[in-house]
Image (cartoon, rainbow, N blue to C red; front, side, top):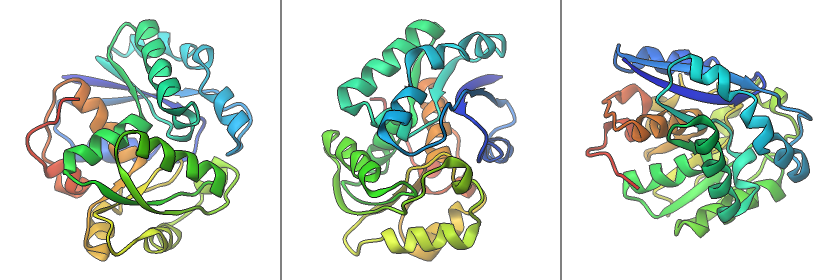
Length: 243
């Protein structure tokens, strides 16, 4: 059994994880520990407080009890708001506290883009424009060419969690760019796990979503390889890229 641990802020789209678990190998378990979201606001100051080391540390003991072999901070905005260097330090601190390999959803996107072998992407974010632009800056720091950024102006994760497939597809379509090789949808509060293959078929290119890449990143940390086409192109690529 491979046990994967996730620190997930609050309650919005956590039901994506049991859905993903069903589509993975039977010997893979996804354990979710909810962290205190604090103020539910897509504002830089609130997001930095949400991703503070002491707040993440509060969930680590419960995570250890699950037998997790690796942990991913399952939050994109609560990691990239620290910038490239700050997000690295956030992950290093989490790894020290947890005593296991650690990463975050922001780095999961970077590693997933490299896994797909693409360089030019478009971003469809639920966030306000200023926060969406910070995600684009993070990707550029990793050497990814961001051709278009689409913000949605949504302030709370709670509101994002109410979105259905109509809003999801509209966001992805609005974000697309003719020269983009992949579309990135970076909010872990957004339900996407049931729509990955339909999104890719509709847009005729790979689509990377936050909860999808978060699980893939945890698998990468534990050197697991799973072929699960229902989870999109990312889960059909060989071999694993070790970064």
